[in-house]
Length: 305
Ligand SMILES: CC[C@H](C(=O)O)C(=O)SCCNC(=O)CCNC(=O)[C@H](O)C(C)(C)COP(=O)(O)OP(=O)(O)OC[C@H]1O[C@@H](n2cnc3c(N)ncnc32)[C@H](O)[C@@H]1OP(=O)(O)O
Image 1 (cartoon, rainbow, N blue to C red):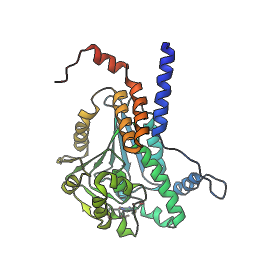
Image 2 (image 1 turned 90 degrees about the vertical axis):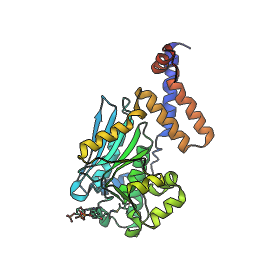
Image 3 (image 1 turned 135 degrees about the horizontal axis):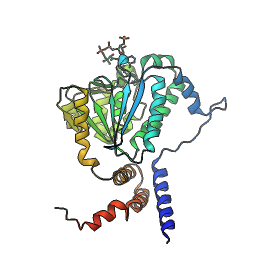
Image 4 (image 1 turned 120 degrees about the vertical axis):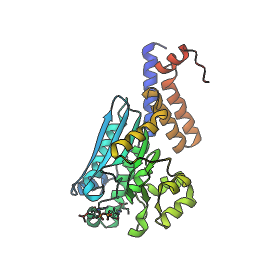
């Protein structure tokens, strides 16, 4: 095969692996003829406030995604839900990236949906539309070809607790609390948080956390397997973030294409039936085999002592 042909073949393999891992954006239509997703987009647009901030650090390959609405303990306004989708979209195409840290502003993680917006759309149809929208965005967040971490300082409540489950890892500061408060609101998780929680801690623990609306502290979170590390640092947000980035260090050492390929094979192993996962793994393998990092490693005659 010519060099051009090999390059094209690799490109096609990457695209097919990527498309397998990306969200199917099926367009369902509302009775007005407008796609369902547009109906909820318009409604969410009516609830402003806060922002979702994205900082991409080219030198480290780590992005920081901040849920920023401190006056409401970083609750998600409608506009923030829309903005989160845009930010995830930006991260999907960040080829130089290796990881993303999801955090809240001003020492709190996120207190879930903005209750003002929730009150205004408190009917089953809009509730289901909002859930579908957030499920799609959080599924795309979890499937990013970047290693993701929720950095939980202060409270992660309701939808905020669900957001932590859409990341690969969860780190908590010693003052952190994760609480699925849904039962107290007469609800169940709807942003995909229950399905993901079962996958992370098993159905027994998930049932305890949801039915007890347990205020989970970092040590209990660790015992249950929901929390990967507890950070004991007290000198403020910048230091906490630096510790979190340090924790990521060993996992993101190496070239971005290799880190992204690792994340892709883990996502396919986690989500796809075995035959499909094996196929995706072969395709992703083809994107790194004989690639620059592979050739460099071979040239060095490595010994993995
Ligand atoms: C159930 C799932 C659902 C979903 O969409 O799937 C949700 O996520 S619903 C939201 C679930 N979250 C809550 O119900 C949180 C309710 N708030 C609280 O429990 C407290 O405010 C708390 C514990 C976050 C903080 O308590 P603290 O005493 O430290 O502070 P304040 O209560 O004075 O809060 C400061 C300020 O923030 C406003 N706030 C907090 N959370 C929300 C929220 N989710 N939506 C809107 N606004 C929120 C609170 O009202 C205060 O504002 P103020 O103008 O000073 O009254």
